[in-house]
Image 1 (cartoon, helix red, strand yellow):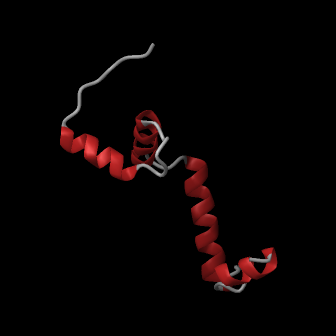
Image 2 (cartoon, helix red, strand yellow):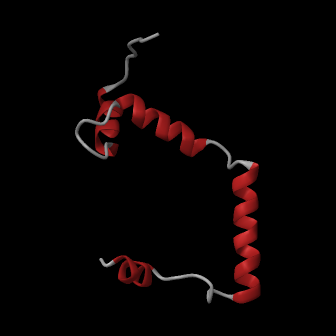
Length: 75
């Protein structure tokens, strides 16, 4: 179902400022905001913990810098 909502000019201006590109819909912006506000999934928490353990154990030697990745990809 499609519906119309009322928002203030101030909120409209803030939503317009968040747009990644001119044709991005307000619905997409709102969905992104909702997603950002949700708690991390259990799977994501586990991945983060695994990376934290890796860093504590081996430091950053198993990770690449942005510059290294750019070079490998030819940028």
